[in-house]
Length: 95
Image (cartoon, rainbow, N blue to C red; front, side, top):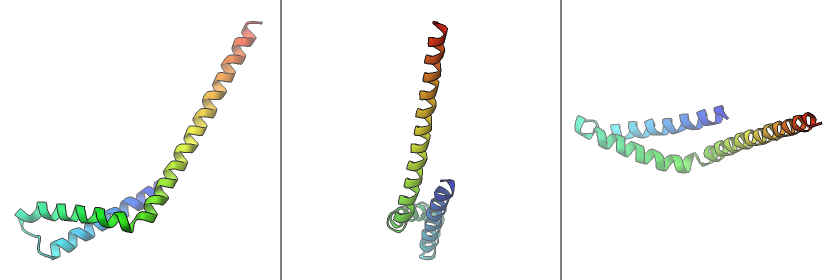
């Protein structure tokens, strides 16, 4: 899972910095234009990431869902096993 999340995050950052570079080359360079440079880069990269990284996002969410399901299943089995042990100990103590 870590590899998938890391890959998605790096791709998002690359898109952001690519947008930053494009807007900088288009002339948003001065000190008073820096907030506009960052805002335009962020908005554009979000829109591009939504469309360009759809497959990666789906893959990442599947991996996260699988991990959560495995952990929930393990927790249920672990809790269920402890309950059975407690019941057995209680029944044996009563005899």
